[in-house]
Image 1: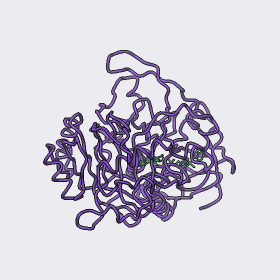
Image 2 (image 1 turned 45 degrees about the vertical axis):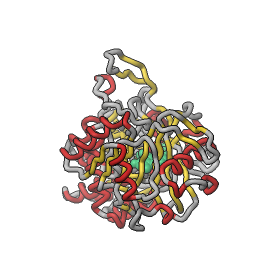
Image 3 (image 1 turned 30 degrees about the vertical axis):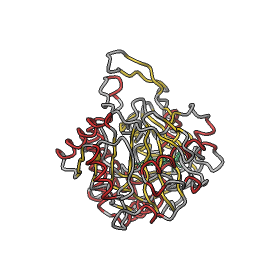
Image 4 (image 1 turned 90 degrees about the horizontal axis):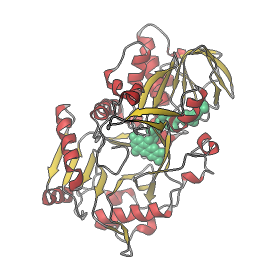
Length: 443
Ligand SMILES: Cc1cc2nc3c(=O)[nH]c(=O)nc-3n(C[C@H](O)[C@H](O)[C@H](O)COP(=O)(O)OP(=O)(O)OC[C@H]3O[C@@H](n4cnc5c(N)ncnc54)[C@H](O)[C@@H]3O)c2cc1C
């Protein structure tokens, strides 16, 4: 960590997974071209991992209905696999367990995973799915399941530990990281940003990367970019949409020993994601929901228990105060509600007999957080103004550790086809990503 220099060729705003990965890859790319990694400076208003990357559940999967997302995730999984120790990456795999209404979507995902060489097994049929799941968890009992997609790569990583791994790699490559520097103004000469003003002083620069996670709306405003945009819909009509919408991510931990959720061989199981339309009842036998619902969970020593989440919900556009620090300890948005605890623990017991009667173990520790989503809930990776690269992942992003590699290549003049489907121009042109039947906005 260092003080603010008065000039850098590249200023990266935000020391989360994307800012740090971009800085690390940019520094190594510059060095490979005879330049210096110290041409890259990362600013953070707090410290590395102070945002969404430091609290993420950490699930890493390929299971996306959108081909462009799958291709991107496959690339990112390779980056996780390049150094599992430094990134605290656990390659336990991932299970997408689905009801009949999602069967065709997931079958298509499996077929396309085979086409891109991403290893997965697809189980079809109610009995076959139950047998497969009971071979992993002998007490599996969820109803209404007719398919299982088992991804053999992916798994999860420990949020803060992987951020530390990225900091070490970036600094070893020469990157200078400046904590405690909140960006307040980005002066321009015409359309070109010339400097970045912060609470720690001003730094002149040639290029800027904005990677501020859920604070993107604030930086978007500093860049005088539009609050609402035109989106050409699938029906051929044009709609005005707010550029940014906030969702509350519902997560929590059951305070049992993580080994409570080992598999039939006593080993760490794959991350489990279940969607189902079977009615859900709580410990007292009261109906929780009879609509399509979904939860995910994994044993996790980092969180100290069985950790996971459920479907998010849209929150009213947060006040400016909340947007400035959505993860401040005093923020009420940080604490998930009793309804989530009831639903998630009921979901665990619906799936596995071992969780029956365990809802009182739900941890009251603050959990969850806010995500900032784009008009179609998929990322925007693009250049704005003349020299500002925006990495806005629409809350898909902890798993996307490889995006920084691709962004760095683009900054060094090498356009990346994997990023092409995520340009801002897709909204006006109607080149939207396909939408699945999943109850989650990120699948
Ligand atoms: C509860 C929760 C669970 C999640 N679980 C998963 C998961 O399991 N898998 C997954 O893939 N994704 C998950 N996500 C999404 C993922 O965490 C985010 O998409 C990703 O971490 C965003 O990374 P980032 O680098 O863009 O932003 P962040 O990690 O938020 O980093 C942005 C940084 O910018 C800094 N900053 C902000 N404003 C300024 C400013 N004005 N000046 C200087 N610095 C500034 C912040 O301090 C922060 O450190 C989850 C998100 C949440 C909230």
